[in-house]
Length: 242
View 1 (cartoon, rainbow, N blue to C red):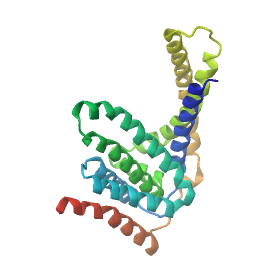
View 2: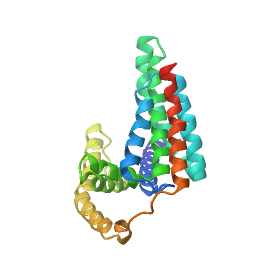
View 3: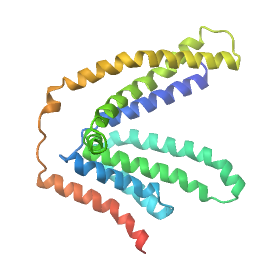
View 4: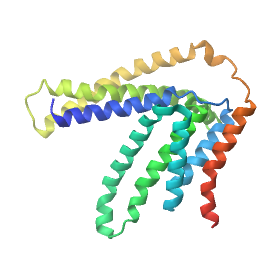
């Protein structure tokens, strides 16, 4: 295995583990999806549409502090993958920086980093399932579809790298056309398995007894946490007033 193949495999596995970590976040508070979904969308949209570096950096720091406080060292995985996405975005924006002669395009990677950190912190507090169930306001079957998709994507990413390398090792031809054919075969095989796997996963999720059990009603501690979280993030909006 070459260093490039190993790097590709590690990247795919890392992305898969990141999505799996999202799927496993159960939240630290009992919150209605009608509440958790709009709050998450609102907070994540602040850095997405902001061009104020101070505001973006503030949100990144606050989201990071919340993440470490809520789940401890496990937050490091979310922090690492967010930085990786920001670096990847920076590489894309470098030609624009060179052509424009300005550093303004580098605000985009900061937006990506901050938005991801805020989204991850929100999922850590509310739980991924609670946020996804809020999508039922848009389409009733959308939460279940996205829930299954999270499991499918993580499975594909963890196995895509190894499958491509396994199929590529059987071919001695190193031409670009053959490499493309190997990638196509690997993707086709994963997609062919996907239908049956998605159907099996959907049946397994529906059969969970605890999914139909009513959740505990919000207590005073949960309400205080939610309000504190919302206020600490919303303080960044003061920059729009000043």
